[in-house]
Amino acid sequence: MKRNAYLLPVALLGIVLAGCSNSTVNDDALVVGLECNYAPFNWTENAGNDFTLPIANHAGSYADGYDIQIAKLLSEKTGKKVEIRQTVWESLVPDLQSGSINCIIAGMTDTEEREKSIDFTGEYYRSELVLVTKKDVADAQSAPLDKSSFAAFVKGKQIESQNQTLTDEIIENVFVSFGAIHNKPVTSFALAATDVANGSAFAMTAELPVAESIVASNANGTTLGIVHLDQSILGDSLKELGVSIGVKKNSALKSALNSALAAIDTATRTSLIEAALARSSGKSA
Image 1 (spheres, rainbow, N blue to C red):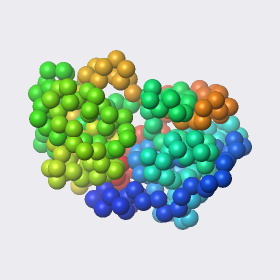
Image 2: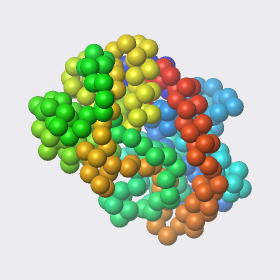
Image 3: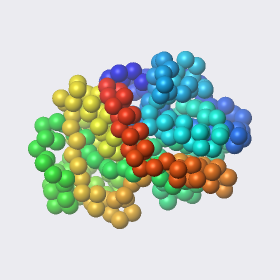
Image 4: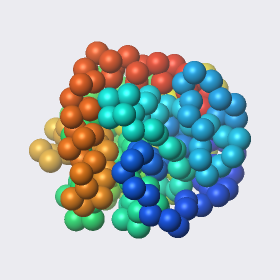
């Protein structure tokens, strides 16, 4: 992903230049599907370095981010080589089901709806939902919004996010009940950020690291800002959001990956996400 890429047309951000192979992969390697467009979890680089892995279906491009560093550690602990395959968000679950990938490491949250189609490992990151809005609006909020102040903050305001994501579902299933207007979802977090910057939306929903990357990439944080929420606003089932690895139903990889994840301590995970966020400064989410 190029620096300040979220100001570019969305077609340039979401395009997949080469599709996933139609052949079914086996479990000898970790064939990882992700967008390579969701900093700091994952993004695209034009040259390789110590942090990246090549994108198998996009010659000359490389993936970096927290997801990539987790994949590398999983490779070390399972003894399986990692292969990165880039696709659009909407194709991740179908690609897993068809066997063109065998795991999703893409900042995906384990939900009851997704569990109908695929299985998930335990968490490899614990998230916090926030709002990204204009900097002057965000600067006026000195503390996380509770239910009362949140209702006043979003009532009659247009909120949006990326299509087919939990952050978009939360707008419809939670925020609307507080009086918010659910803007039509867009095809990327990058485009949602652009809509907030130009006033087409009042705010967007995002996980905190993604929001931090968006703010840092926007004129060095001079245009957009972050508003924190009391997570209890989301309800008991959503107030503690985690991201997990998706695998096929009844896949033996689930046990192997859970064992490997258990060996990655909290300090290591925190260090990796912080380092990825620092590297992703100036890149789109």
